[in-house]
Length: 338
Ligand SMILES: *[C@@H]1O[C@H](CO)[C@@H](O)[C@H](O)[C@H]1NC(C)=O
Ligand SMILES: *[C@@H]1O[C@H](CO)[C@@H](O)[C@H](O)[C@H]1NC(C)=O
Image 1 (cartoon, rainbow, N blue to C red):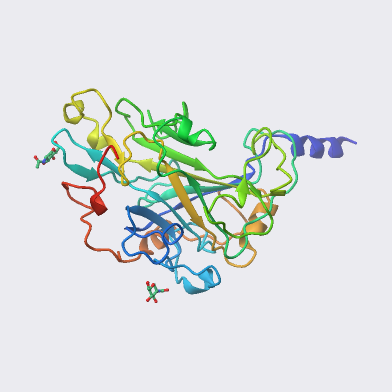
Image 2 (cartoon, helix red, strand yellow):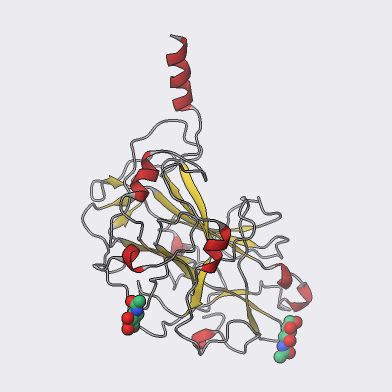
């Protein structure tokens, strides 16, 4: 039957089985409720997006979506918080300046922040794979190693990458450390989280071991989850566009030919790239989205406009850090090359 075979073909065609959405900046602050709950200030500076109930302490038993009154994310039922460290430029004269973020491709007008993806399937996966499960209330996780300074140090992680943007749509090559030359359109950092859950724990001591990577292949190729972590989740994925364009003058770069960018925790290699996630979707909104493949336009989700996203923000709690001007030291006294 003609119609049936067409339908079957459509099922096997590459579909954008993912949601991709912008989240504007909520705040840039020295807080980390996942790794250093309650610590004010936390050791290094972060940039945070999502629901405005973000705080130094975020009790997993609290109803986060219920406490937020707004979110910086386009999908207005998403009160999760997503955060990373902050990028700095170290000029030849030894002073530092924070590198601002800019809107990603397709998201003009969004103030800083980052792009968040939840992938139901690989972009390039032509086969149907089983449905993926949404994270649960109270779920949180971390990926990366703040102390990593070499390729070997991050061998156990997959897909924590940098792209030197030639234009806003550059995606390759993806490398594991800071680009060595000026990037005409800035630097993109990308973080893909593990996708296999142990099915029991909403968090773990290192904030990672309740999750695992597929035991063979990748999430994108439909790789199976290990028996210890049998539940296949959607793949959470961040892209952050760092606008390095004002720092591309090589006269200001180090004389020894090294690159000048440094993470807010002192890493000049880039291997210490890491990200944090605290789930906060309202009700079953995320599962609804994951059950019905959609791309940008997701009929099952409520959206808000750019103005509403940009107008949700939060005052900094740690005000001792000067995050706007040229500074002698990184916030918290972090030193480049640590
Ligand atoms: C934020 O945390 C402080 C304590 O660190 C607490 O006093 C305050 O109530 C919290 N605010 C919210 C909105 O949870
Ligand atoms: C250091 O260099 C930067 C970049 O050239 C410049 O903007 C800044 O004013 C300089 N700071 C000092 C203290 O010389």
